[in-house]
Image 1 (cartoon, rainbow, N blue to C red):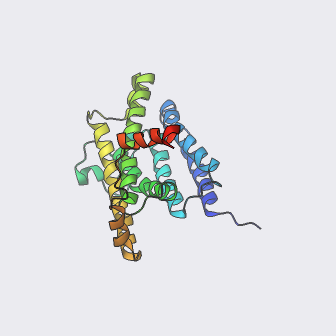
Image 2: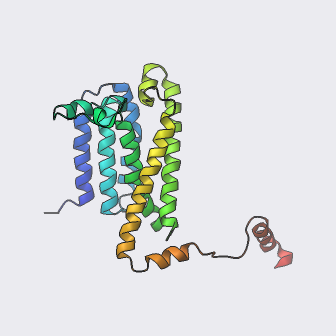
Image 3: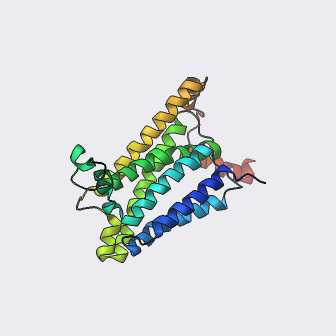
Length: 241
């Protein structure tokens, strides 16, 4: 009997998890909006499963994040009842930390940076051949860019649908700086994630310091811009051949 591979097990577990949390969501229309990107993302992973197989670590951290997002989409991020869950244990998160709003959305934005930075690093290293310092910096930049793009998409969708649905999708909870804080937390999460990866590599990669140093060296003394353009034009001109 053929053994089911790890990433397939994660997919099956996630589908089961998703179906459970798809039952009777608090706000169906908001749930649909929240899950559009999830469906496209899962489809992309399935479509590229043979052409570009990611590491077990990458599949695992993405699975964890998607599970968290599924909970948020069921209730809407502003209404996840974590206070009721911890309250049954005699503990209040909001009272302990002095929170005045539901912070589940903040946790998920931080987790996006923390958990997705590693898969992004794997993409940069395996496709763009990033090494050393750039293999840690580029994932941080991409997390920041995607976080900003998501906030723009979120804003556009909220304007398009309007009304209570738009407000539920935004989930600002009256904070005018909500988008900025979300992007900031994603950035901090990615920075923490890359520091963890760098620490592990520093511990086990023998040439860590040398690779880091070499990645910052100038690889070419030739300027680009107009210099490179002249070279291109000269190369295409038969008289200069």
